[in-house]
Length: 124
Length: 124
DNA sequence: AGGTTGCATCAACGAACGTCAATACAGGCC
DNA sequence: GGCCTGTATTGACGTTCGTTGATGCAACCT
Image 1 (cartoon, each protein chain N blue to C red):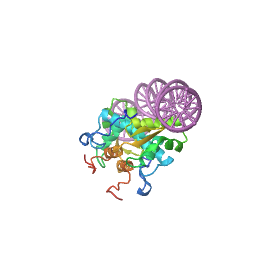
Image 2 (image 1 turned 180 degrees about the vertical axis):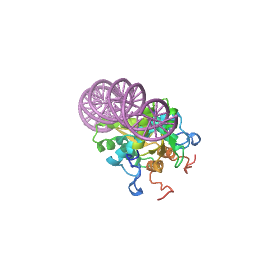
Image 3 (image 1 turned 90 degrees about the vertical axis):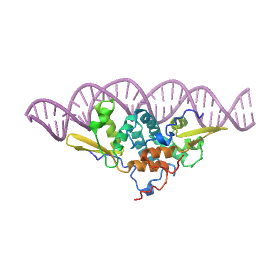
Image 4 (image 1 turned 60 degrees about the vertical axis):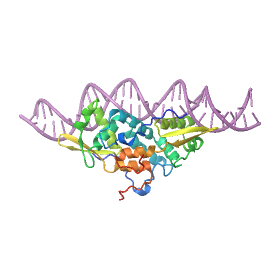
């Protein structure tokens, strides 16, 4: 249940050029576009926000997410799947319920891509 | 030719909560989703990259952008229009040619939205 | 004026997307 | 076992999106 994400944002710092660094090749543009497209829907953006609001290591049960929208349960499940396939979140089933969390560092790497070579503190 | 962008990312720091700060309201989610959706296409992402690569205050002529893709000229024009409507870029006609540039600060504000209240150095 | 070049707009098409009702699957409880 | 709850998947529908050829508009050049 957690083996189909992209891992686009997770490249090493060396190859992670950034939007403004150089004219972005076709392949990398296609991969990154999937991530932005995943965030390009109001419902998915709110889902991301609700999950991310739990902070590092925080989780949210689907049973808390679904009632926050005036949408059917399959629709929410579909959006969560897209966010997962974009490599933004992951999930785990625990008993009856399924919990989602934001993959660590993804948002920071995305932000770093937008701002260019800002040499963020978290060196690896 | 430059009067229909959004201005979604340009809110004051006070009301610019960030993705992880709190569960994002419906309206703001809808506005921000438009920006991410604009970036959620490989062609538009490459266009943004090509324009942003010119740096602060840099411009690119459409006549340089179009031949970089194996797409018709109307298609490129269409994508540029979407980027402009998303409040990411602007343009100006000078003589025969039209020049595009990235609206200053937009990428930084978008990045700040993703990383949360990181108190970036450029306080205003 | 007429002709040419650069870019935007229009109208139309197929493909992808967001949504739902119905159904299937997983786990707890009796 | 059988039933119930929580979540994912399927199949179908209408809408939006990406693309194109045709056309329109603006600016230069004789």
